Length: 309
Image (tube, rainbow, N blue to C red):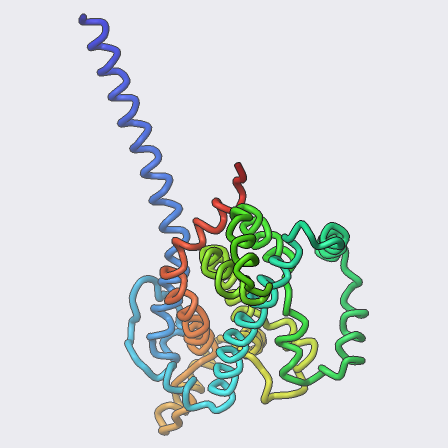
């Protein structure tokens, strides 16, 4: 009896020690993950001239809204924000709809070319022609310096197609067969039966596409860098990052900006580091707002479609 109690006590002490170590490790990971984001928030709300001095960690030293005011006053950044929002919405809607239609078509066993078409799509996911042929293709299609370059090349994503098709293959065939008996066409079956059943998968790939579209800047750099009206917010952020790296943050520069600020110049109230932090927060906020609402669908979509009985 005493031995069993001793073993239980030993296990209890061991479990407590193990849980404490896990708690410390997780707490350290949370701090390492959250601190850079929180520090960016603090700098974005701090006075630009004061931010040049450094030493800002958890809270702003001189709180101000001037950094965000300067962003929204600038017409270029406002246009870039609109381009990013409209691009994200259009690209997500078009890509998700076309990907789901393709996944439904290639999931039908009666479609003769479904295996060959799937093989071609999978090969295209692993083998790419390269940057120069892609650029020449976009140029020959007349999409260079046009808004269409944000939408058309991203209509179908092969990885998302595989996820949706796997999810559709897990659905009972009786749903489609009964609809066909009732006289429903393929498009009606897709819209009325398949789409409501694959909502978790649709939400999951919507998150993938939306995050990719919102964070994308390299396509703007390649195809639309010479068209300021088509610059995205992330591309503007990249430009500010480059400009902030090229500018010196010496004490002489800080004194010069302080003199300009004392003379009443509004533009001197912000600095590259403060503007960079403000743009980072504006670029990150929409994803932070949307993700909690799609998280449950994201988990279900990743797990349910991968299991087939």
